[in-house]
Length: 103
Image (tube, rainbow, N blue to C red):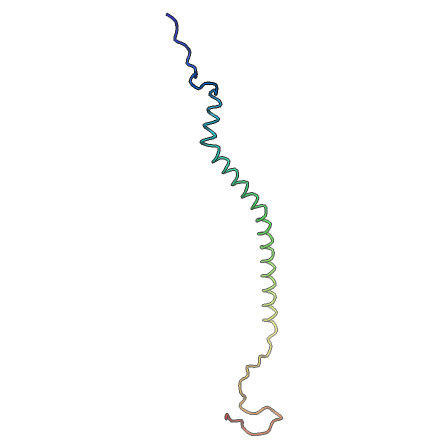
């Protein structure tokens, strides 16, 4: 009695097991892997532009805050007289005497 023939993949024809595995990977896994790698590349390209923009924005915000604080300190240090435009009880000096009355 002769031994059974070795198990071979004759039914695959000329493709071979390696090509079949590569084909299955292409159908199953290659598109998601390429999509993830493409997304990472797009985000890194965006970050290359966005991070310097954030740095510039942070510097401008700090300069604006310092400018605003300095302006507030200057305004608080020298109080100016403000004319409110309210009527006086007596006429100003130099005008005709008497009490001004509403008309």
